[in-house]
Amino acid sequence: MGTLNLKNLKANSGWFSWTLVTMGAFILAMGFVLFTNPYKIIPGGVYGLGRVLHHLIPSIQTGTFGLLFDVPLTITAILVFGRQFGAKTIYAALITPVFMNAMTSFLGEDPADGISIISTQFNFSDNVFFAALCGGLLIGVGCGLILRAGATSGGTDIISMLIVKFAKTKFSSAMFLVESTIVIIGMIVLGDWKLPLYSLISIFVCARAIDYVLEGASYDKLLFIISEKKEELKQYILVDMERGGTYIKSSGMYTGNDRDMIFLVISRREIGAVKEKIRALDPAAFVVVVDAYETYGDGFKPFSE
Image (cartoon, one colour):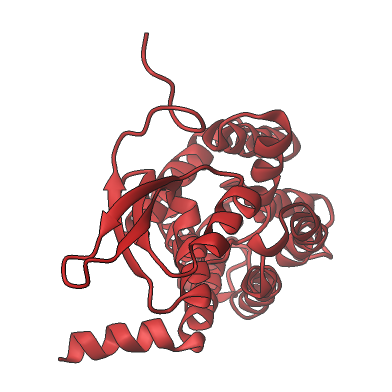
């Protein structure tokens, strides 16, 4: 009974998703402040780029640089993708740098200063590999919670989605291009040849952590949707998501009524937004979500030759 009540609370309380975003932003900020920023590890993202710029301009904190990138990127995403980017994404983009700057001010950022909490209590200068692992884990968990709430952490997610839209490439390829570029920039600016190794470790762990937080290691999700709002859902899928779906003829066992069931395959990054949209349009909808471990065809993996 307790589990059922918790599920109902999650489904019916609008504040729960906002809590997830807040928790995700806080954990993400911890990953950067405690484990990556002090050791010049650049795990991609606007905050990774912000860490590089902070090295050049120490008077401006990493979180502030991230905010300066996030605001125009989020505005661009809203103009390009419309309702797919809502208030929670804007909130995530604003609250994350606030957490980062506050933590940095309180904990410090130089493990060699001998006086800050980072230096005396959380000093991993002798084990940067461990710092890269923990940083990637926390950043991934934080991003995963934000994605589960139907938002994104902004930044390079948005850049990658813009590349996908206009260059017609896969999201994974776009993300790899963006993150690799940031790592290379960091290596050049910071002048550390070991940086790419630690950065790639963080990026890999981060990606795996996101997968598990989103309840499965598969990259795609298969949805079966029965709803009285099928036309509104059709509009959302075709126009807002720019995806395709299939109607499957079905009949209610008890009522005997014929109706169309929507068959839809989406990426794991889209699952939170789709569930939120269905909940907003038709709270009485019947939805089954299944892991799709391999998906071939238009918009997904090509068949192997």
